[in-house]
Image (cartoon, rainbow, N blue to C red; front, side, top):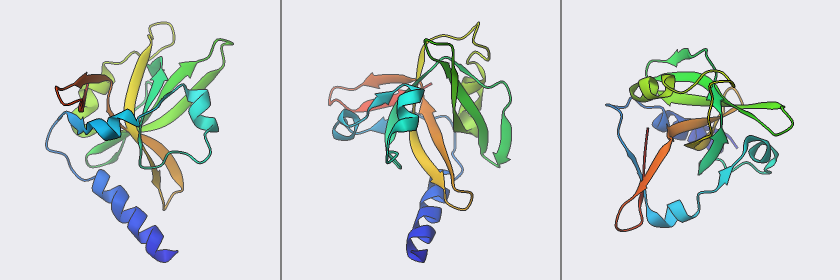
Length: 151
């Protein structure tokens, strides 16, 4: 059990390591075919959560507040309103290099749109906190079927 916790902590730190700039995230074609896109209500009901997997998540706007939690990472949330008007949110971590692109997203339901964020579902083992490590909102496919995720 301790080995699993240590491994998970090391894995999380590897993903939160400093990045050298906003770079496109390349996802191999085989892995991209397994990426599922969810609305927030559906993802929150998935058992077990797809930890360490890349998912697409539909949303309408981002939280206005952004907190600087780690030297190269920022914490916020993305929000969605379902047809009945109920609001749902998912916590996100955004790399420092991607902060500008994230800040350009709308911050209110009135100015929001229909977006899909792509990210990796991760758990901070120490805090037992699950979040989406954002990779971007746009996807292009190359000739081999690999996905390139950008902002």
